[in-house]
Length: 257
Image (cartoon, rainbow, N blue to C red):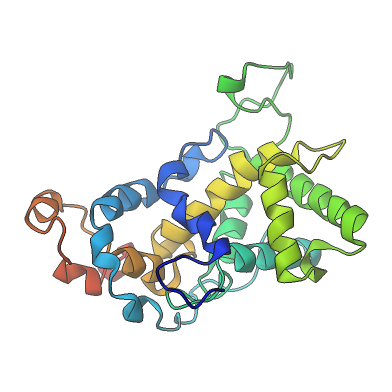
């Protein structure tokens, strides 16, 4: 990572894009557990992000421990991936320490991942792009298929699994998947990354810590988002362009439980 604080580290571009893409993918829309509202308010409060010292404080131990959906190989892949996409720097700890892998695992092991409320009886025809993916798979099944396919292509290209790659190679490999340049015969990896994995990642960053990610509210602190209760209409007017005092100690659902 560069020492020039005026230019974000290359891998940090995943986070810089989050406000414009969070919640837009069809496969991940049921995951909107507060991140959309948080991103919207954070966008207007971005100027409050000039206090990185608070966000750089090491995250506290996560409240959720262990995986319910991931196998050992899947856990290794996801942990490597979130650490590449969210490297430790002056703003946040690495992705694993921020709870991002835990969040993704819990979403996939729950009702969303099991396809609750989805029509799963077919027929599975090729639909228009605006209709999203037409798959006979639940989000959990599609996620696991994508991890397997990505590992298969990593081995084909580098001779080793994704979690064994050097950080630079892993970063470039993820970017190639996102750009549709890594093709697998069985799984549409570009769609897997952009319509399922990346939205899960963004939700993990900005959702309420109750759900396992955003540990210690580290991303809220980075953006200057004050958390709950979500009644900041006047605050957005009165503090526009200025740091909001409440952003130094954002409140989670857990703080009101």
